Amino acid sequence: MIEFRLGHQLAVVAFCLSFSVIANGASAQSDLLRVEMVEVKEESVLTDFQLSGTIEAKDSIELGFKQSGRVIEVLADEGDYVARGDALARLEAVQQDQALQVAQAAVTAAQAAADQARQASDRAKALLARGVGTRAARDNAVQAESEANGALESAQSNLDQAQRAVDDTVLRAPEQVVITDRYVAPGQIVGAAQPAFSMATLDGMEAVFAAADHPRLDGALGSHVKLTTLDIQRPPMSGTVSEISPLVDPASGTVTLRVAIDGVRSDMALLGAAVRAQVEIAADQGIAVPWTALMRQGEDAAVWIVNPDNSVSLTPVRIGSFVDGIVFLTEGVEPGQTVVGAGSQLLYPGRQVQRAEVLP
Image (cartoon, rainbow, N blue to C red; front, side, top):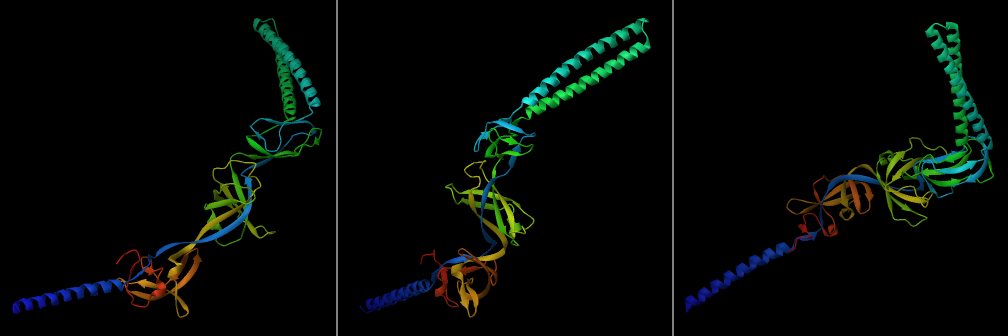
């Protein structure tokens, strides 16, 4: 009976000791504060530019007649897409047609004279070869043939000029384009080289902006750009900065920046439309931490560093810049270190922490 009671008491003591060890372990585990842990990395510090501008064709052309005259027909209007060589307008060509007819008659007469001179030269050469002709007669015939051929070439040149004058009374598209503006109407008298049409090529469009002269602006060349139209409903577009003017406009103090729009051909609905661009420029390198990690130590900013034993220590830092949800630090932490993000307001030096994702 005594042995039974003694064994029972030993079992109870052993059970209590075991329960105490388990309880202490659970208590130590529960003492670890669950927080967000972030491994800091060195990233590019981006400067965000918001620009407003207009959409233009990459290449535009102003086309006019090569000679003056009266417009008798206009064959294209604003918004028309025309192919290379299509007629756009015509001038009255009465004088040019008459000059062409005179030039054609002159070529016909010169051709006949050249044929006669060639035949006479051939006869003189044949007679001299048979010994019944003279060298003087042959030389004269050869000279006459040469003069006749020269007159034929001159007449042919005049005919070509007359034909070009007739062709120039018709204004044709230099390549596949869209007409953006028309300046002439039937009955109007126009001068040589006076613009008759404005047109845009179909090889793409670009957005043009007047940007403030910023020291980091040169870094935008080749950057990806998000584009949003302001006065018309269009899906968001994207592009690449293709050109930055090296000179500042003295009148406005701005720099011209051009963005080649991706995948958009010349579209009349877009030409001249107002557009907004968002350009991000890599300005420098910095240590990126979430804004929730930022604390204060006296007059200085600080963050909680997670030590290898899961304890934390408050470390002063120097702030370089802010962006959405991120603070870039220039001093105080190194890439690869772990800082506390969300939950940092509950800490004190030496506090034990664990990742919030780890369940007890």
